Image (cartoon, rainbow, N blue to C red; front, side, top):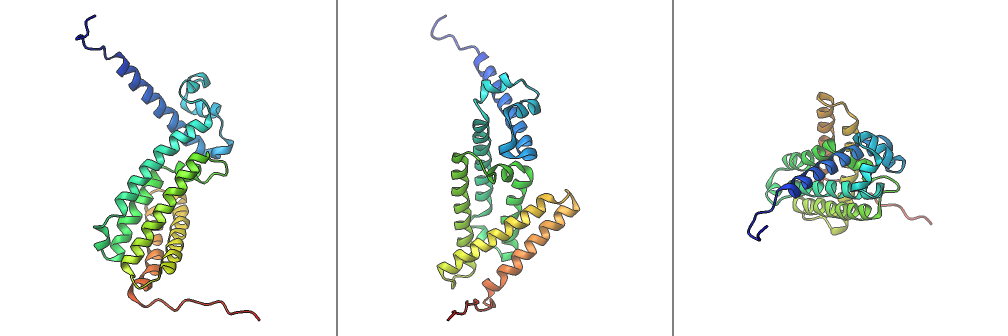
Length: 221
């Protein structure tokens, strides 16, 4: 065969089949992690869910941790995209109620579409690499929330912004659990609306100057 002869497309087809198989295995792993948690999940259970033999699974992943790392990295990539969609300079020009819509909606949509995210990221024995990347993303989200608070309430001190951002994020995470537990449809939409109402009622006094003075802890003698 001469050097100018084009290569056969077979390797590309094999690569495409491999990608489909990987996607199949990751989808199965997501289902099993959601049902059982990371610690209780086995590669055999993932193989059964994917309708393949354990030997086929091991052709692509050497162990459960490798599967979790690959799945976690893909989820974190998509989460960063949702983060980028939510926190934009253009969104900071919106009134607070509208800002909550454009920030909360994509974050909730991501978690509703990927329930394995919370199951995997908050397990007690998630792989360290994924835990570290998740912690970095969490810190980035908190920074973004602090920047939003600084924009709407510039008179707040850095310490106040940090504390309020942490509380805001905690409210969102608590409400997110209720959203995910709610049946899809009207009940879930109503739960999302309640979460936005709680966030709005918490943040509005901070942005319009009517927030009460902070409570100080009396000194003990």
